[in-house]
Length: 82
Image (cartoon, rainbow, N blue to C red):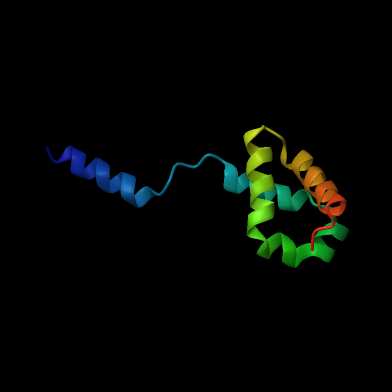
């Protein structure tokens, strides 16, 4: 009967399962062009809603971090976000 307590404790303290999304986001930021990153660093870091929507959508569709970075840069300039 104690096994379920150990299992529950391990589940609650280990955090959510790692699906690779956080690593994907970090790698995507590294793939942004230096110019884009330098000009828009605050937007990349602070704008959670728009960039998170794009990252989630592209991650779920299986795009690579490099492809995702290129798509986000293009979308940013097309929609003139700022």
